[in-house]
Each structure stands twice: as C-alpha cells, then as structure tokens.
Length: 380
Image 1 (cartoon, rainbow, N blue to C red):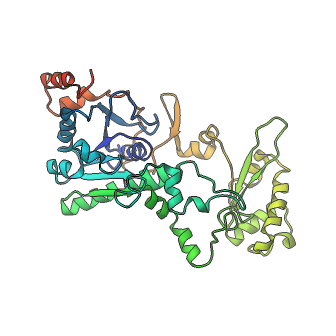
Image 2: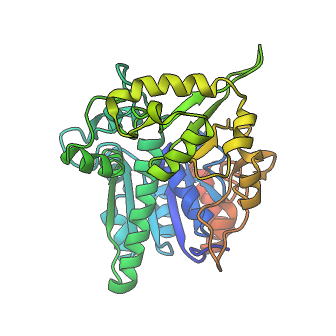
C-alpha cells in the first residue's frame, strides 16, 4: 500500500502546491485528511485531490477549530498554504497545534516564505520564479521569458519541496521524537531547481542571454524540430538532445549530415546555421518516420507527445506510467518501489464525504456531531 502507510497527515486545503503535495504523499500510502471549507471554494483539481478523506469544517467557528486541534492529536503532520499569519489568526498556528501534539510536523508553503519584505504580498507561480532567476533563464534568443506552465513554482519548487520538507522532518522526528515547522517557499524551491545553472554561470559556462546556451535551445543538438505533416494536420514535433559526442555522432549520421557541416560540435558560431539545416532535414519526414529511424537509439531522440498521446505510448504502457480512474486518465504514483508499491489511486471524493466517519473514529458521539452541525462548524 505504499511506504508511507500508517502516517496520518492533515491538509488545510488550498490551491496549487498544497493539493499537489497531498497527492504525492497519499500516492505513497499516507492517509490524508483534507479539511475543506464549506461551499467548495477551496477545491483544486480532481487529479491532485485523489486519495483523500474529506472533512468539511467551518474554521471561522471555534468548534470547527477545536475539531482540527483534536485531529492533530493523532496526526503525524499538518500543512497549510495560507499567507503568513492567517493560520495563527484562525487559532491553528504551529504553537497551538504542537501544544496538542509536540511531535507534530507542521508544514507551511507560501510563495515568498514566512518572513521577508514580500512575505505578505499576493503572488502566483509566475512571480515567484521571476524572483528566483528561473523565469529569466527560460525562453528563446531575442524573445521574452517563457513561463513553463506553473511547473517550476507551484509544483516543482512548491509542492514537491513541501513534501520533501515534511518527510525530512518526519525522518528527523524518528530520532529526536520532536516535531518542527517546515517553511517552504516557492522562490527558494525554484531557486534550488536552478542550482546547476547558477553553478554553470559562476564558471562562465552559462550566459544570461536566453536561447544561446547548451540547454536552453541555443544548441542545435538540444532542440525541438517540426516534422512533415499532411495538409490540414496539426503540427507535430520531435526533440533531440545528444549532448555526448558519441551520441551526437549517431544523430548526425542518422540524419545524413556531413562532417564539414556539423563539426566541431561545440562551435557556437555555427549553431544558428546548423539549427536551420536540422530544421530543414526534420521537415522532410513525418514524426512517425523519424520514430522508426531514431526512437530507442542512443541518438537521444523522442517524439513530442500531447496529453492525449502520452498515455498510449508503448513505453508508458509497459511501465504503467498512467492509470485511468473513474474515466480520467492521469499519472500513476511515482516513483516505483520493489516491496511497498503504491496502490492504484482512488478518485477524489465530494467535499465532506468522510466527515461523519472521521469524527466517529475520533470518538465523537452522534450528539456531539449534532451540536457541531447546530453551531455551523460542520455543515448540514
């Protein structure tokens, strides 16, 4: 059932990185109890909200706050994604929660972090990766920076680092017996994702001029090319990335390139011309034809697949990389494990689906539940 089976984690549900963190942890077997606001305004998307138990609670009601504090007593961790200070004003800050359970790990995810001059400012992924240097580095030569969806801030730099922080604190707790607060920020997480480029820049090996470097589409051998398509067909593309000389030689030979045209590999002044040559070459065959020639070789090649195509690729099917849950095709839990392999995810449940069951497990009587409903702490 996954390596985190037996861990209970409370989620004060928000958007973006929080639900993604919960998906990662629940995929690995942790029990996630989502505390959701009445009305459904806090619900993110169905895939990230999979594998949850949902308890609907009005945190503006003292009885609702007390319910969450009761849950903290049996939890290993809790996390929230509010602006700094909001959880404290609700009565659910780290100090209060950890008074109930000193071993509790308290995770916090924000864009700017809990402290600093921007801590209270609103923002989103695009702003956070602007401050970390990540966004400036992404884009083609002579063009504006290109946001990489919200992968680098919300998910890679946010939810993933929050999950890493929570797991690290739980691991440390196994030695010390003490919980602690995890302050994860998307600025710092996305900066960490840029570590190799900060290192290359310090060595003079990565320019701040976009689209001129080895890995930012400056090199003709680390690039995307359009293939031949029939009239009326949507454009299709392939990617190549043979950085190593032996792999580069394989690609050049496969596409029929001449030694004089494509060597030396790192003659940067020739890169623009070579990109034009490769664009013309790749435009002579369809994507399927290039796959027949290059896929599975060491030329470092792959077809660029859409969201509808990727789950059907033979490699992804052989690995079980995608699953279909209640008719929704989605990524399978990752990574894979030799013993405690995670189960197939369960679909997101309606808001408040597990309220009565969870409260019963906590020892709440029918009379106490009725009182909570009467007070408005738990919706009817």
